[in-house]
Length: 371
Ligand code: TRP
Image 1 (cartoon, rainbow, N blue to C red):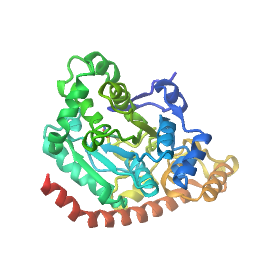
Image 2: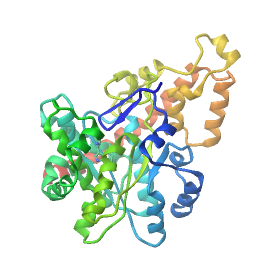
Image 3: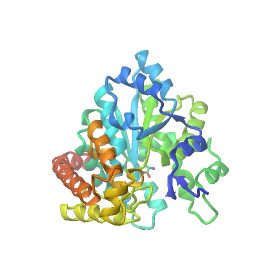
């Protein structure tokens, strides 16, 4: 039995990604597609070769266009409900790779409205302020700010509202109910919100006066919004956005996803060294209960969030990753050692990230004051 739930507002249970491709009706990122991406962009990001970006819609169509010289733009976003954690960085690091290899413009949406509507806190300003806090994390990755277009929904609504209305006119209540699991006691803001998430899939085409292909890198949990976006697109005369979906970063407690609803499962970019170390050293692993058992039988990297941290973000070299996998399975590598090494890599990475965040503060102040 698999009782996994994957919607933009709830992810729970054990995720079976092959099954999600079937259920959602998306396509696998297969080797033929990878070959093509390598040819077109010049290099494969490890997120691709390791199938962390594992599923897509119409990416082949987008590459057809790109190969004919038609530029695309990148669109992704963030619901600013709390600090950013390592799992959130995946689509943004990928967006930087896309930007570096294609020069694409990058549209980024902060949905303070969405989080206000779906979360408990009654103070809307909390989410708006968090949007600017979270923007520091995107900038810290080295995104080209001359090609970055930041939208904070409650601030930029004037530029977005007309399109949101046009989208909403083509979306029925029964569709929203079915897609998002809305029920009669939910607030009415939630019903409308998805129209806002469609806006940036079309707005650059409206503002430039001609249709521009759009590529959305995002967690697979966001797909329901964009199914709806893609249904509406032809009715409004736009291209359907292409999408490439990433797997969600496993939580340190052994859950399928890092989530702020379980503080021990996440590492925030703003965590201090001591906290990072503590969370990693206390994490669930695929190890055995005693050292002698593990030396004899080996451990299981495929259920281990520590191994996934290496594979997602902290071991760029394939050889080294394979070696770690083998040494885990054959009992040469014990969990304590593997964790300690990861901890020092994460601490180093986030020290650098936090320095970059500091440097980005001036720019964020400027955006905030212009809003
Ligand atoms: N709904 C997303 C979230 O909760 C935020 C978001 C808005 C987004 N637009 C997006 C995510 C585009 C991915 C792609 O985090």
